[in-house]
Each structure stands twice: as C-alpha cells, then as structure tokens.
Length: 621
Image (cartoon, rainbow, N blue to C red; front, side, top):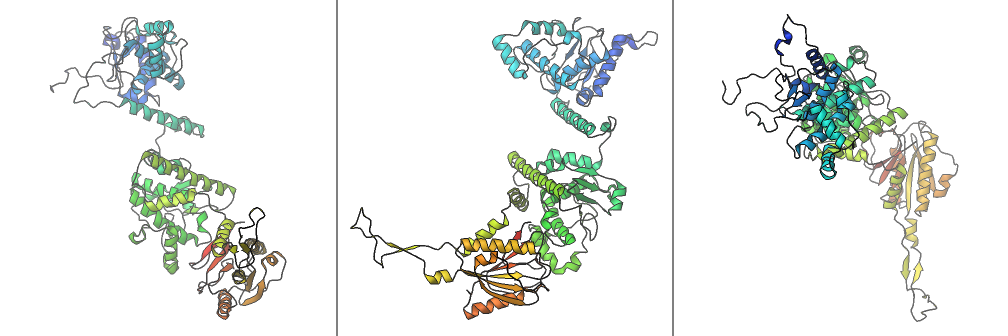
C-alpha cells in the first residue's frame, strides 16, 4: 500500500457507488435508487455541468454519517457527493438538487468561511438561481427559494451579517439540510499525490460549450448536430479565439466551409476567402493538421482585416495577392501562430519586414516570373475571391478593419508586448485612422508650395497717425512685391486622351481652380497631352471653372508635356522647380523623366505603371 493513501479505493468518478442489496437479482429494484441514478445521468449529459459531474464521485450514505435522515445531499471540496439513500423524488428533482451542489463546486463556494451557516445559505441561494437560469430538471417543493435579495454571494453574506438572515431563509436551509450542513469535510487536507480537480475551469469550459451549442442551434443547426464533434477548421477558430486576442474577434465573424465540391469548382487547392460574403473555404483534401489549419485560417483573416482586396487599386490581382502573402506569412512566422503548411508557402527572408506595396514594386520588375508563384488557392490564382466593390463588400471590409483594431486594443490591454511585429501594428493603426479626403490632402499640397502672402509694415512712405496718439508714427501696410505675386504660378499637365472621363476632368480642374484662387495664384500654365503636347497658354484660375475646348482625345504620352514645361523653365517663363499637377487615368508610358516638383491626380482604383516620385491623389467618385 502506498504511504499516505487510504486502503479503501474510491468509487469511479461520475458514477454512484453500488448500493448494497439493491442490485440483488432476487429483490425488486429500489425506486429511490433508480430515480437517483436517472437524475445523475441527466446531469452527466448536461452541456454545462456534465464535465463537473464526470469528475465528481457520487456515494450513497447508507448509515447517515454525512447526510441526516431529514436531509437530501452533502458535498465535500474534493468532489465527493453524498446522497440520501431512501429519499423519494423524481429523476428531474434529483437533477436539480445535484446540479445545485455541483454549481457550488464550480463556483468555488464549497470552502470554509465564517459564519459558516450564513455563508452556506448565501452560496446555496446563488447556486440555486444559477441552476434556475440553466433550466435543468425540476425544483423539489422543499428547495423552493423564499423571496430574498438577488445579489452576489459576497453581497448576500454581508447583508446577512449586518441585518441578519431572514427567518424564511433559515427555515429553508433547515428543510433541505436536515438541521445539518450541506458542505462537509471542509477541514480535510488534499492528498499530496492526487491531482486537484480544477472545478472552476470545468465550469468555465462547460459554460463556453453551452453557449456554443445555443449559438449553433440559433444558427439553424439541429439539436443533435450541436453535439457533433467540431471539424478541424472550427477547432482552429476556437483555439484562435481563446489564445490570440488580435484575431479572435475577426475569426468569429466568418463562416467556415469545407465542401470538397465547392473547392474543386473554384479550383481552391488549400484555402480562399470571400470578404463580401464573410466566408472562408478550406479544402479538406489538403491534408492539414491542427497547427497548419490555424496558420492558414490566420493567413486568410489577415487578408480581410488589412483590407487587401480594396487596397489593390488597379494593380495586377495575382501579383498583389502574392505580395500580400509574402508580408502576411513573415508576420505569422514571427508571431508563431500554428505552423506553415507542409505543401509550402510564399516566404522570403529578404522580404521580411517590408510592406505589401514595397514587395509588389519589387515583384513587378519581373512580372512574368512572379505570376508563376502560387498562393494558397493555387499557382497564378489569387485566394481573394468575390466582388471587391458594392455596399455589401464595403460594409464587410469596414467591419473587418474595426474588428482587427479592437483585437489590437485587447492585445495591448492584456500586456502581450513583443508578440506582434511592428510592421503589422503600423498597418493596423493606419487602417484604424479615418483616411484624409483627397481634396484635403491636395489643399495641404498647395499650402506647402504657396504659403500665404505676408503683408509687410514699412516706414519708408509717409506714416499714418492715430488721433489719440498723434505724436507716435505708425507703419504703413504694404502689399507684397510684384515679383512675389508673379512667381505664384504652376503648371497643369492634362491627360486629354480618349480614355479620360469628362466627369473626372471636371472634378480635378474644379478642385485645382478653387485651391489656386484661394492661395492668390495668378495664372496656371495649361498643357494638354495625348500623343503630343498642346500648349493652352497661361490661364487664370477662375477661367478653369468655365467651359473651354480641350485638344487631344488620342493616345497617352505624358513625356512631351514634361519636356515642354522644362523648356519653359529654361527660358525663364516658368519657375525652374515647378510645381506641376498631372491629371491622368494612369494609362500612359511606363517611365517618366523630370526634375521638376510634381504630383499626380488619379481616379480612385487606378494605378500608375511606374513608381511615382511625387505625391499621388486619388480622386473619389
């Protein structure tokens, strides 16, 4: 016999101890015992308290050593539940009584606290109300609670100690406990070699399991389906919600699909995501284990949370998807989220720490080779499916962006420093801030190049005097020099090719004219471009608001326009530094050369075929 261990072997956890002669074949079954066993079986099948019941030990107190003759039940901190051997009750009533004492175990109430009787009454009141919310079994007549305050156990105990326990509650406790105590063996020390059962964790898991079952049923699943074991991708989502606060809120908002036929129809090799439909497909034939499924799920969720679909802005879909994959995979490896799929992924140590935009610009230099790289959907195919426009898509992306920002707030609140890459945090913060409208950014661009004209004070001319102080000379306010006013000019290079929409031209010229007039710009050098440059001369800003004829409507070549403005600066007819505003739709040559300060105005969703050196303003529709 092991030292310190009792020679009496405990009964199997979650089952009642055999009750003497009640199991003898020569005698009839005991109705009281049958009802008790049926009630315990119902508790074991309950989604919330079933785990606690499975670890508890149920024993029948035949000699009434623990449960008095007028009592019902008793419970010890170690999980032993003593039952009255001859109490007649329905199985549903035993279900409720056993559930109340097991709730006391899970809530951590079966312990020594003075005054002991008042503490036990407060604990039983809280547990009884908890089981009433669970709607398990039927409450026996003796266990019906009298009217009392609905509060926490600590509040009830404080109230009982200060104002006294109401007489109905004292009588209620005497009826159910038989003038004894339901909490027994409170001074018993735990056995050193036996692992202590975490009753509170079992209750927490049971509550989570019960909520999940209720949500599944509310979502349309049958009651039997709610008990079915979860698939690998659903287990990965639960794991992500429990352990990764950054992506937890985002993971809860997407439906997971593992239909092989749909994956074959859309040629999904491993996984894909449709942000507008809020659905993620994971191919069950990809052979992913639990860690690999977690990695793939996090990969697709970051696509949604970082708004990669709308941030493409006219770029090549496959190449942009590949660039985003390189950035995401490097972050997930640094965060140690699951493990990469054994079939391979897009990762390059030299690209780690770079943004998707920087990676795209590098891949675009060899686009033929880059398009052969495989995403999680397959070679040459983006794993971002569905429409990337419309109200449904816009609402979904806004929700994903907000959910990821909330996940970051929770991560920061939990103090998990050093577990998320800096580049990922910067992207989340930048997306969380509302974007500055393009016209406000354009106004700032004008402010930097055309600061307000300063009115100077001078004593050079006859001074003016005030009547109150005629002896004090006052300076005269002088207008800015004519040279400063004449230098406030800039060039507008207008793409007048056939692909330019008149609405975009009108919106861009209207904004340029308004800001130029507000900043005392005296003239604008307007140059139209299609396959060649057409000089429209100096135009006053207010004239840009009127109707005038544009030349062009052919192909698009912008370099002759830049060359013409450069020649004007050489002749001294225009400032050498510019600036120049280029209004285009992006369908132009893939290389421009100029040393003058310039910026581009593009329609939203379009992109230049080269890396611009100047600022780019996307004109919203």
